[in-house]
Every structure is written in structure tokens, then in C-alpha cells.
Image (cartoon, rainbow, N blue to C red; front, side, top):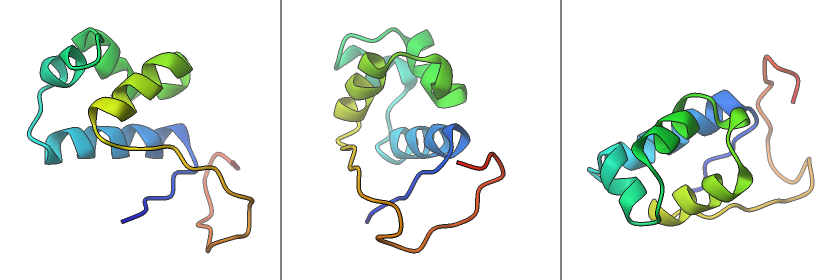
Length: 83
């Protein structure tokens, strides 16, 4: 199932939800890809303050992938941040 993400807040929610769905603690998810639990926590609370490298590591640990597509190729939800 695809999960569109339009804001950092939505990204944080998806990352946390996927980790919990997989039954992983922040420590366990981070250990698989060399991230500290505090880095996983930061990605799950304020991803806009984290590095792209850390994001890709956590995506890998959660078996997620980043897909970019042109705007308008699917139905968009309005976002409060105007993204």
C-alpha cells in the first residue's frame, strides 16, 4: 500500500507507525542499519532536522522505499504547511 507524504509531520507519523507495525523498538530498528536510538527518535519526531543519510538508513531498516513522482499524478490532500 502506498502512503503519500506531503509534510515532515506526516513523514514522522509514517516512520513511527511502520516501526511499531513491525514490532521494533527504536533501538532494534537503528541497530540493523547503524543508527542510534536517539537518531531514530529524532526522525520520528522532527525528520526535517535529520540528515538525508539517516532517513535512508531508517527507510532501509523498515523495508520502505522513497518514490518521487510529478505532482498531480495522484489525488493530493491539502497540507497545513503548504507543501
